Length: 221
Image 1 (cartoon, rainbow, N blue to C red):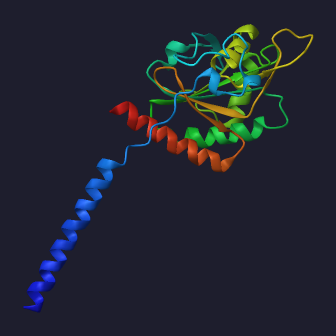
Image 2: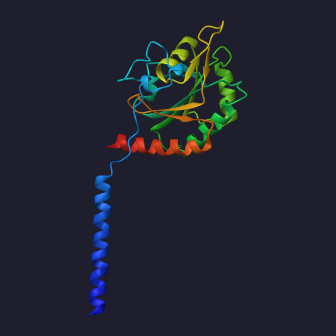
C-alpha cells in the first residue's frame, strides 16, 4: 500500500512540475531586444538633424572599400546580423582593446555565415587599403567574416553620426572630424540598431554574444 502511494505521489509530483514548467514558459515572454531610435541615444552622439526621430531609423546606404580593395556596401550585409564599430589603426588607447574583443566575436561566430563584423576607420586619409590590410593581418582578421573599411570621409562621418549614432562632433580645422566612441553596435537583418555595447569591456562581450543569439532566434521565428 505504501509503495503504491509512493509511486502515485511520485507520478503526481512529476506531472505537477511539468505543468508548472509549461505554464511558466507560456506566461514568460521570450526576451526581445529593443529597436533603438535617435531620440533614445545621448544627443552628443547624434547629428542634430535626426535627434528628433522616434521611429523607422535604419542604417543608410553606404559604399566603402575593404582591406582587400573590394567594394563593401549595405548590400554586402543584406539579410545579415552584424556588429559595427569605428576605429583608426594608429589609435593608442581604446582601439587595440576593441579589436581584441572583435576577435572574440569573430571566433564565437566563425561558422555562422549570418553574423558578420564591420569596422570603419575614422581617419581614411591615413588608413589606406594597404594600411588596413597590414593591420587586419596583424590582428588575425578573417576576411570572410570581418570587413575593415575606408573611403570618403564625409560618408564615414555621416554613418557614425546619422546612422550608427556613436560619434561626437568636435570643433576642428579638419572637415568631418569626430571623436569615435568605444561602442559596438548590433544591427539586425533589417538594418535596425538593436543594441550598444562597450567594446572595451570583456564582460560586456558576454552580453553581446547572448544578445546576438537572442536576435538570431527572433529572426528565425
